[in-house]
Length: 149
Image 1 (tube, rainbow, N blue to C red):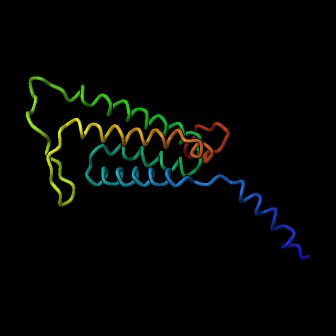
Image 2: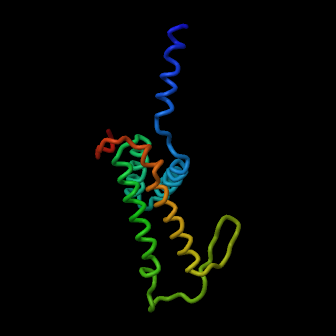
Image 3: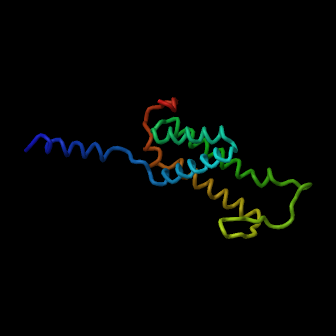
């Protein structure tokens, strides 16, 4: 038995115990990157977009600060989107009728409650991903708040 064959099972055991980046987190990070890059290109909320990209780098680097930022980001977004109907309601400037929505070639008229419901459901999906057990296992166990480490 050669030396290489003797060490192979040990390496397989180490590889099997390493946490893997969950697929749902990959999809969420791709959405964050696409939204941030489009925001930077449109010059809308550039600082917020850059901070989101730093959060994505921290998550890919398995930093505990990335997990904290991801969870805070999703909870803050859920709170703001849940308050959106209250914030948008202005009796003096109330537009009567449904909102026109353009999605590619499709154009439709949707009531505001449908749009708000879809946004809240998407935010709940983000919270579900951020607080998932597999996502938590991806990060290093020691508490390190240096995102650039």
